[in-house]
Amino acid sequence: MKKVIIIGSGIGGLVAGNLLAKKGHKVTIFESHFMPGGYTSGFWRNGFYFNSGTVSFGGSHQFFKVLKDLDLDKKIECQRLKFRFLHKNLDCILDTYENFKNKLIDTYPQEKDNLEIFFKELDKIYYAFKSLLVGKSIFKKIWGAIKALFIFKKYANITINEFIEKFFKKDSDLYYLFTNFGYPEMSAAYFGGALVCIFDDYWTIKNGFEFLANTLVDNFKQNGGELKLNSYVDKILTKDSAAVGVMSKNQKFDADVVIAACDYKNTFLNLLDNKDLISQDLLKKIEKAQISESFFTGYFGLSIPNDLLKKYLKCDWLNGEISIFSPSIINTKLAPENKSCLMVQELAPKDWKKDFIENNRESYLEFKEKIKNEFIEKASKIIPDFKNSIKFVDIATPATYQRYTHNTEGASCSWSWNPKKKFYKKLMSTNIETPVKNLYIGSCWANQVGGIPGALNAAYKCAKKI
Image (cartoon, rainbow, N blue to C red; front, side, top):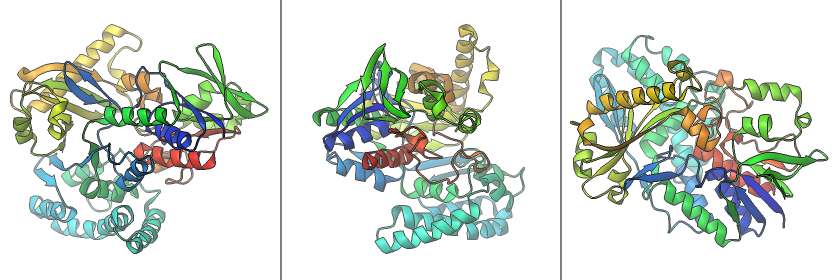
């Protein structure tokens, strides 16, 4: 059995730790924050619960496999999510793909011919990924995998904007509507997977992601694992070109294997004690590599009862000018009686720092106040008297997420989703190996687009390797 150190207690680190501890390895997880979970965690304020950042997940077959493998399938209750989608003239519940298609044609009759041509091509992408990701039979999954592979070869290096532009004018409503699905300039090959998640496979944790993180920690400890909170790893120690431990709080901890279940850039640009183990070309590539966008998030505790809030939202999750998700609509125990909690999110632009003076706290707080007021204004269009219902409010920016997760610039999903700016050669590969012997990547950063599925793939691959 081996002595394993894992840096980071996000879902990748926790799952890898659980899998290895269950096999009898001596595993220690180092977490810089005072609570575990990273993006897949949550917190309570004044009786209101909020997820830290992540509110949902796709790839449920993979997630449910984790719960089953760790004997947690009876402890973690998951719930399917349905979306309400708002875009100018369009207001619809995204219940099925076919209903969405019909709704679009009804809403934009002048674009009927273009929509029919567009959906003829999009159908191939959607149904291939549906068979692969949520197909019930092995035959459907295999056939889906074959079709999805063909589609990936065709669309992997084309951005969604380039794909949509083939069918709709760049200044049209439909161009903006479709290019706002997912991350900006993402690969067109991801479009099918995104749609399958939206219509067939988006889930959340009924008791909140904090409950998931704590349950994974409890299970990890029961299997002999050790979690060190408030323990930032200052250095990854190496000897003879191999990782041999870490340094934390001026104390050395030895290990046979180190799993960096954390930010890839931080791992090699700041934590590794000997950069000579990495080629200059790779170091430059890491420095210049583009990352995924981060978010602005507003956390609101409201005096609005959950049944009335759901009447306003009309669904579990609303996506439009802003994204609105309420944990207490999913589970009323996550807010005080006759009150509700709400998360408002939107993607942060790459140049978000231009709106305040960097390293000037007063300027930054003014910027956060501006974001808060913008969220209140936008949410008030959907929820009457929203402003006067607020009992608690806080705002997170990319700087907030970077501070708590150490993800570069608060990246929400590892590397850029733009195929023109990819870090890995293959968009769907899971890359845990590093140039340093016995040092592996066990987080979503092992995958080009990351997310919970990417983190779980990395965790399983690390556990299998060790």
